[in-house]
Amino acid sequence: MTDATTHDAPETATGPAGMVRVWDPLVRIFHWGLVAAFTAAWLTADDWQIAHEVAGYTVAGLVAFRLVWGLAGSRHARFAGFLKGPGETLAYIGEMARGRERRYLGHNPAGAAMVVALLLTLSGTAFSGWLMADETRVAMLPDMPAIVAPAWADDDGDAHGARGDVEGALEEVHESLANLMLLLAALHVGGVVLASFRHHENLARAMVTGAKRAAGPGDIA
Ligand code: HEM
Ligand code: HEM
Image 1 (spheres, rainbow, N blue to C red):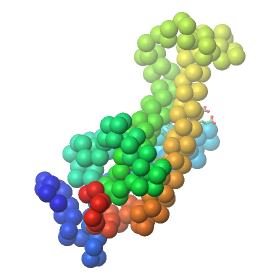
Image 2 (spheres, rainbow, N blue to C red):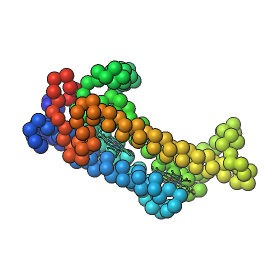
Image 3 (spheres, helix red, strand yellow):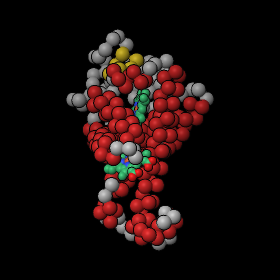
Image 4 (tube, protein in one colour):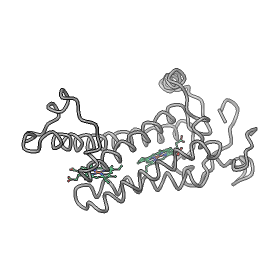
């Protein structure tokens, strides 16, 4: 590999023969910590509010860390290394549909788009939860345009006034984003399983050990 900043793992130096370090330890701790915190937030929603909020803030903290690590982290952690434009991403998905997509050592373009969708949706879920948890936070929101608030009002919206409407709407937003996260997580795991079969490697294990088969001819390192 040609990229050689100091914290880049030497991709030829680790693990058994033919394996190279791809995911650095912080990306792996981030990933499994996120899975645990997200699961905890889901399991505690509606049942155990304090635990729910702690789990939700843990998700938010992990996402914030990942944004920094996407700028300053190791080679395959950096956004600049794996984010692609819509053209390249759609072309890659087209190749997938034809069963001809190339193997990437880091995130492939479709996986990279999913990383963005997951991080954005998690941020929105945590932010809407934070807004909802205390009414003084809702009061910091700019007033809803008159055309939107009535459309989002609860059945009993009048009893709460405009702010009650906003709180009801926020709850809807929070739950919808949490449900969208479930869908994205399912697609994400489906993509991981599909790519694992296609390229004959266990990508979930790679997210545990950090190591993947070295790039072969035609692969993109
Ligand atoms: C047990 C289920 C899961 C497995 C096996 C799994 C596996 C993986 C793997 C293998 C990658 C690397 C993908 C690649 O090779 O390009 C990855 C990345 C990622 N996954 Fe998961 N995942 C799981 C659940 C989740 C869930 C529930 C979330 C969100 C709450 C999530 C969020 C992410 C994110 C944000 C990345 C990007 C990692 C990074 O670059 O920092 N995953 N996952
Ligand atoms: C990003 C991770 C999060 C996920 C996946 C999540 C998920 C959910 C879900 C599914 C519900 C709906 C429960 C129901 O009524 O059926 C909910 C409710 C709620 N969440 Fe979250 N949440 C997250 C983060 C947060 C955070 C950070 C906070 C606040 C600090 C928060 C505060 C709340 C509150 C106040 C409710 C309403 C509980 C009630 O009165 O019914 N959530 N959350």
